[in-house]
Image 1 (cartoon, rainbow, N blue to C red):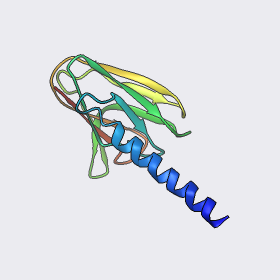
Image 2: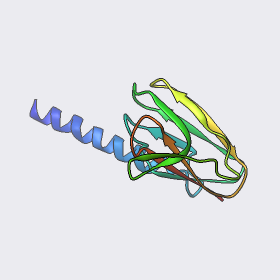
Image 3: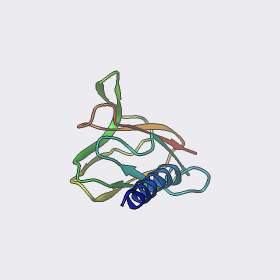
Length: 124
């Protein structure tokens, strides 16, 4: 029984590491961004100009994603020149496409519900 429990825990850790490292979007990787219960699984993603993000809510948590970021625990909505306008609600275990990001630059998205849930989008 103890060995089975250790095997399940190990498999869970490997799965979390795979998702966290595999979804960065950099170097020709995926444009997927995973949302946890109160955070983005990765804090940044790199896209090619003209690409969109596939945002995936892996939990039952509700998220409202908008342009801007949390700064020292305070929400700072922002419209950044060149960024698509983002106003997306996740109702849990769903996904939405955000973009396209047509202008090179660095952009910021945040969840209005979860303090310090920030995502940096680098477009090249």
